[in-house]
Amino acid sequence: MRTPIRADVRAALAVLFAAALLAACAGNSNPVWEDIAPVSRPEVDATEDDSLRIRWPASFTLGSVEVFTGPSPDEIDRSKPVGRARALFTKVTVPRPDATERPYFELLADGGKKSRIVAERRLPLAGTDNFRDIGGYETEDQHIVRWGLLYRSNNLADLSADDLRYLNRLGVKLVCDFRSEPERLRDPNRAPANASTEELTIAVEGVDPAALQERIRTGVRADQLELIMLNAYRAFVTHHSDQFATMFERILEQDNLPTIVHCTAGKDRTGFASAMILTALGVPEKTVYEDYMATNRYRADYKKWIMRLVPIYSLFRTRGEAMAPLLDARRPYLEASFETIEAHYGSVDVYLEQRLGLTPAKREHLRQIFLR
Image (cartoon, rainbow, N blue to C red; front, side):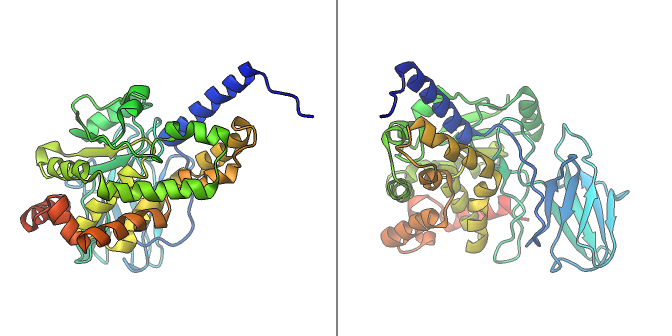
């Protein structure tokens, strides 16, 4: 016979779980990633000692590379390289120039015949683990998305004072917040000082973890959560296109850049928004999905934590593995959005133009702003 758990213990577990689940959605640490797999484009990642490791694919060059740095893509100091790699080497590690500033790097290869600007994709902020720049991706017609103009993130409520100073130096002008009103009341944003906020409310089951707390407590299966998530991604198209259309209106105004787009987890509403922007710019589908699923890389530790906690919180009514569909950025979710677009509009291009307001002229203007 099981010993009943006291009400006060159950309440404490509920509070602990709610705090943990929200923390998993917001994130408050920055894991260091030491990937050893070859990269498909030049990349910058922090190392354990907070140096910066710069890598590039063999397709960029197998010749020697000089690395220069500067405070913006347009202010690279080419007077003296901060790093060099000999022929056949495809990486170099350099000290972080200044912990309070975001560094950009230029890779000059083959005697200056090849050049590529690169920066850290995930920014080193203490209060969020999924704050990323969508720059650096190559389009189908060989343009590059500009760095430092559009960021995607999860919850901004836990940004530290140092984080805010860092974002202020980036010159952020606008924050597009896709969260629901209850989410905003529960976790008010800490936005950069000179940034205005556009509240683009999207309240749909599956994207607000706190709304699922009771279902998890009483028992929920993985297939149920997966269906909830698929329906949420379909609803982005069928019920919330107005919010994404407004987002495009705002980022077409250069006075609003740089812009942050975010929600609670930084993967669903924000993931769809980023996918629409990259698609409109002509970034290949493979890269769009790569950017979308990068959340899984940055939030792997939080996923493990929640999956350990859920059985205790739910008194073993919900298995830890059942939470994976809620915590993952899964390709079938974004595919559900694209399939819904195809079913209702025939193509993404038609959806972008007719529903999100990106006429050919506006789409070309978007490309002029965001592409090099």
